[in-house]
Image 1: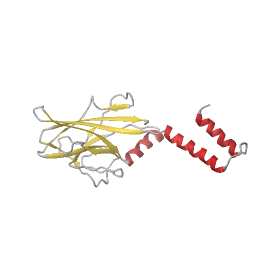
Image 2: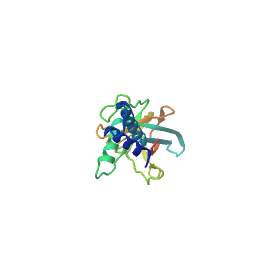
Image 3: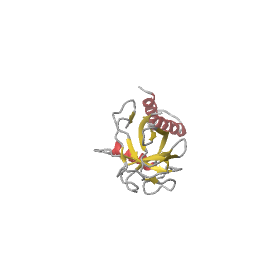
Image 4: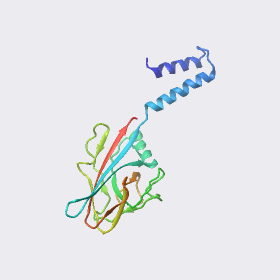
Length: 205
């Protein structure tokens, strides 16, 4: 018999009067059981970004790495699709932001005062996130990176985001999360190529 089961049986016995104990003690046991259950089922989601910028001649211009915030609507969407959904086909897209973005937990695609999207690239839509096989509680798109070809000189890029809608500059869909480059803003020019690798990791601690 495990620890949580023993606590439960002890609490039930106390309620039925089989064991005399103060009400407060019984409540403390119940609170401990709830706390124990919450700890056991804690689940954390991390989204790490590795972004490379190449000049038209193929030489590396810069690299940016960072781990992003999963916003509230993104967390809700994960709960809804995994815990409640009966059928679900994932469709997620990568977008770029202009300089100095500031993401907040309450951001949505329709309302995000701290950042703006950068749509100055040749591709007609935001790039599709194509994930490979899951292994070791992690999955990534390293075999099929999101690729953007910049179409205008002197662009200032500050970060990237993940959403469920592919419309450039659009406000529909669910924002999963995003963040600013850890090393600050980066510059990009016409025909520079931006390669984006996204790694999603789940952890119980």
